[in-house]
Amino acid sequence: MKDKKIIAYKKEQTRKIAFNLRGLIAKAVMQEWSRLGERQKNKPTLEYIKIGNKRSDLYLALQASICICPGCHQTDGDMAYNALLKHWFCTQCVQGYRDFYHKNKAILDQGGFVGDFDEDFHGTFL
Ligand SMILES: [Zn+2]
Image 1: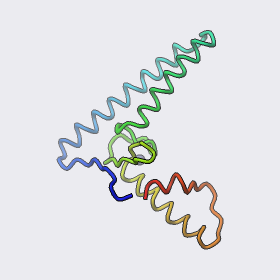
Image 2 (image 1 turned 180 degrees about the vertical axis):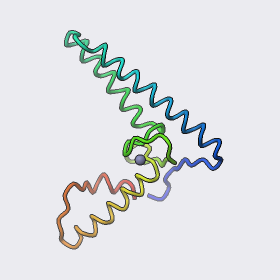
Image 3 (image 1 turned 45 degrees about the vertical axis):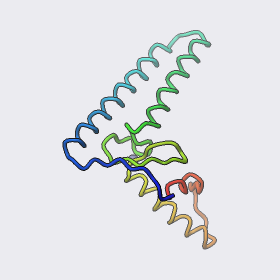
Image 4 (image 1 turned 135 degrees about the vertical axis):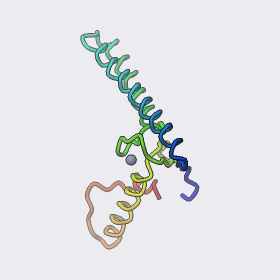
């Protein structure tokens, strides 16, 4: 896929502001996630599940946002959108997944065996 959307800040000051903001948002979300975890303790089953679903939604929203890379959990990288997975990944992880795909695909194509390789997942980064 050639038409990948990449967010890369050229001005150092803009980079710092954006990365600090991403870090603050990620920290605030995780604090709320932890707070909900405390509230969840000793609750009746139905309420426990409702709070658990809220925590899960919060975590998934953060993972899908541009604030954090779901591959390495960093908040200070240039980000590329993976439209197939509907998630933002840092450009370093994207390159890593691409390299991993090509390396393992070559082994598979030669009839070799590779463990822990998800061709569908890694192929979304090409
Ligand atoms: Zn990453």
